[in-house]
Image (cartoon, rainbow, N blue to C red):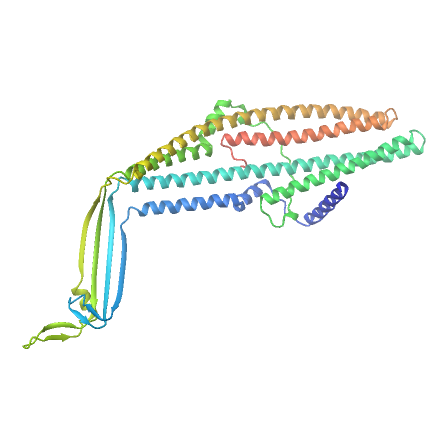
Length: 458
């Protein structure tokens, strides 16, 4: 089953290579990051949160404005009813139209509207900070995936170079065996080595394929089979940030990192919630105004004749009635909370607890940031030491391998020892490549804490 899976991946890798070879576009790391920032689902969710915060701010501004409502009704009454205009009981079908316009505005409500507006602005700021943090995280994920592809690509070249070299040695060994200069066992060992090299090449191709698929999926590309990145050579250069003291990097991180800004905004929001809850304990004052008019479609009494019989006339024109029956009323309303089952007081206490939680979260965010910065610095220094040691080991292994090649060429070293020297050299190449990209990525993390973007536009 393992052999079948290996050949399946190998075949898929070949198909991937054929398809991608027809694709001329090679994605740069800047293009990958920008595309991810536009299409990543988590970022889209954060952008929706920003839009919601904008809407909440508009709602908070609307609380300062007077409301205005219009209403109208038209009714029919059948049978003995009181004419709402003449106040006479009549046994008939009557119609009645009523219209009104009302408005009210808060004059004072414990400064709740002011605090709600300030809270909405803070929520808007927190949502923007959260979006920025998500963008930083996605950029970091994309950069890591991009570097992983570069590592696997270089590692594949190393494995292919080893295979090519061993295939040459296999031909050389065949000639030596044919000439009777080395035993046939050396030829068998060399064939086994070439077969092992081919397996390593297939494994390296699979790793490269998987890393390309991972980045394509992170970018949410539909045509991920044709995805590939540009050929770039990233140097493992020392970052100027690493010359800063850890205290300076922590101080800078506290200024620029959005984790702290988000925690501070949430703390300010919790403080506003306490003030809003306290405002509900204070009296509120509002001003209201109402305009109304009506019209009836019933007959009306316009007088009494000499026999005492009411004189009936038809209804006045509707618009005349609207003009005659219009009325205005306005006034000021004062509401004083006296007792409401402790709900307002409990709400204040509940928000005080939430404020204390936010305060603790703010302090924890600063501690976490400091811990993460020190860890990132330590990891970067360790990665640099590992990279320098791997370079030194690679140089030593290269000398040893060159010496082994010379001895093997003149028959002074058997195939087994030669293969051992070559394997150690190839492994040291892979270790150096891995250490290089690990150091580059960890350096980028420290720079990010110092306020330097993962990807800087030229």
